[in-house]
Image 1 (tube, rainbow, N blue to C red):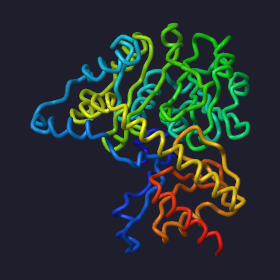
Image 2 (cartoon, rainbow, N blue to C red):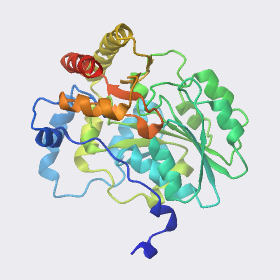
Image 3 (cartoon, rainbow, N blue to C red):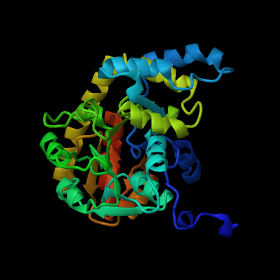
Length: 363
């Protein structure tokens, strides 16, 4: 069988998501576990989204609308774009893979940041192309370094903004400077999964590049602030020509009926977003203050999670916290061997994490 597999697949490792809460409770024989590992919205989905799904259950014998027309129409109105500028994906993970399959070949190169979302590198590896990793500067994408890394073989540059797992962002001035002089043959992908959490005034509005008809794809998701992670629905924004190429290989009915209905309803629930933003803002203050009191360095975050240095092997701290009923993410796979990433949750969840962290670090 091994001889039948493409050679570049042999060395790839699967993406390892965190375990479900119920499975961890079963394995450890404990209850009331707090999951702060996957940057989910602890509030849960909007009531409008839940009601929309309930109303759509009776139609589950029918295939979904193939292109997600009604959701794309709602997004086009919100973004002041045409439907032809939009494509839906089974999460942005699927869109990242579609982008790789459409544009990359073995002779090509992509540019990514060290310590960025690992799915970009995996997409390059999938297509057998060269992945050029640029070291971060102060836990942030070094866009000047990106520019220097571009060669005649470079096809795609991936920029996560804010970046997962560091929570840092690149500013409008940095992005504008980077975009000046970028060859038209290079596609720039801005992954903005945490866009709605950003409060910083100098954050770039990259949809403007799409309106300028630049070779740019902007990725956004309903998994994070909209709290629909379990439905797996995201979207991409680009010029119609790029969207057309992506649609040529997009699987039919790639986003399900309930996901489309819930996402469309969630767009209209401004109260849910406002409540979530306040939750994260308050939780961030509490955790920052606690880390400072514990003399733990952390990376200030523009998203709904914090990268914190626990001053020892993060895998050990992860396991110790698990026994205390708290799931976080160890960051060794990203090259941050002494860091954990903690999602900002409900106040009781944050306080349980704080209590557990203080306990395990005293050992």
